[in-house]
Image 1: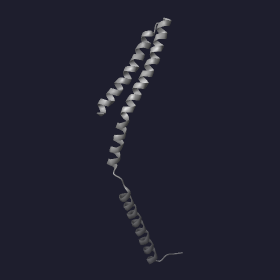
Image 2: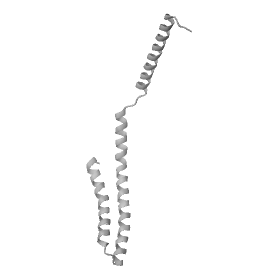
Image 3: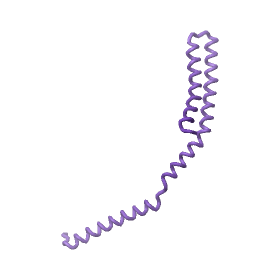
Image 4: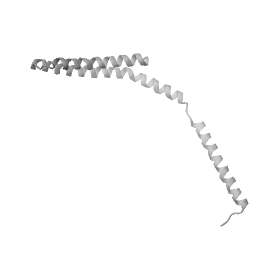
Length: 112
């Protein structure tokens, strides 16, 4: 079926008009339902900062558990007369210091 010239132009205009109407409606929907991104970022920032105190306490608790386990491990090696007791004690002490230092550095870096 062949279209006449007027029908072809009419179809193009209808298609073009429909396309423009769709773009206009999409733009209207985006602008009317869009939220302020800055407010969302500030809210997320405040929530993460509020969790930091709990995270710090959790890090200290993990450090205490690691410290107790490490102390028992070092004590057992010392009593058994192992020669690598100094290395194990240094590793244990280093891990405990690392947990405390990381928490302090993060707090100072982010100004919390």
